[in-house]
Image (tube, rainbow, N blue to C red):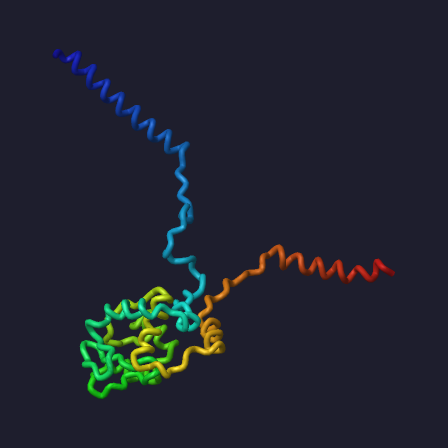
Length: 221
């Protein structure tokens, strides 16, 4: 290949590079990418806009109205997952967790031969249906510092079945939830109503409407 051919090839490559650079420059002058301020598809679980207020507290679903007709057999089946740590018969031994005979309606941390966590001992009170609902839903949320490493029963029907079965293990004399207690629990655990902001149009329309009402008697006279 002589020098003339080499010069032609070099000139062709140089021209192609110059054309590519000019094309990119021209395209950048006429085409401006638009980056949206918000996601086109909202992502569930993402943080809301700043200033949106504190997050609403999570609460378990009410279960008192389910206990009377709960599936006892299902509760017994669910209890098998707890048998590795607890016994349920009268006088049964403690394991990693305490014996739970008579737990429904009984006092918290009542066994003298079991080392409860300080958090459980400080909680105090009796194991009401409402307390058991919260504890079985999320033990560590109900009693921070509890030794019980259990994620909880998320379905309200499962919690009601478990509590109904536990009631039969030495707590049969503990009264079933009354109608008043059922309604009180529903009110306490009802999800918060969404806040409704008054629109600007509605607030501006109100004075106009008042003005029209004030002028009406004058027109009538």
